[in-house]
Image 1 (spheres, rainbow, N blue to C red):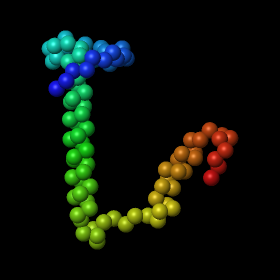
Image 2 (image 1 turned 90 degrees about the horizontal axis):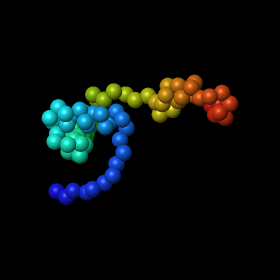
Image 3 (image 1 turned 60 degrees about the vertical axis):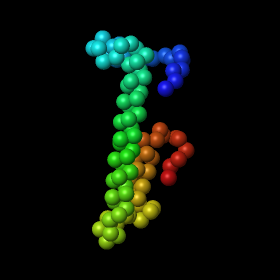
Length: 96
């Protein structure tokens, strides 16, 4: 595992969190805290991605007669489109 020296900037809140982790003894220094938490975030994302993939595969394997019918394609996003139109500023040029 290589080490890359890099100068980075943190918000006050992010730096305070890293410092809290060091002060709590979870990491020996700020660099280790940042690297460790990035590794944890990556592992968490990978776990979520795999769970999602398993669920998609499970649903795809269901018999077609157990699938819920989908609305017509024109109606499928109508609620979302209507909401977006309702929050557009007046005079934005899109009045569909």
